[in-house]
Image (tube, rainbow, N blue to C red; front, side, top):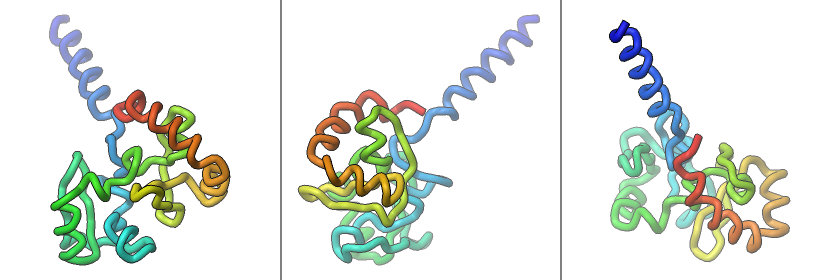
Length: 146
């Protein structure tokens, strides 16, 4: 009987540990679906990174399109890591995590933001400053939640 109780408890703890979403939006372990976050700043567009130029940071693999971008990230990751871990800025303002698309990127005050889709981005853009302020308040409360 004790073995069954122990096994059940172990299963619950294991499930809880794996159920938590990463602080970083990283489907299949790749931050921002494998897009090079430095390229948003340098090239002003989404550029896919390559598996051969990977850096592990905050429990995610960050991919880069060039060695220069990889080195720039390694030197100052907090400069390039998107706000709210790359989760949807609008969703974060509402107190939840939502996935994002690379095409929805925006840089505001040298910070990178993403949104769920272009329709959400358009709505977010209309009240961007207020929603960023709201999301900044919500993020510490939700960043470690599912």
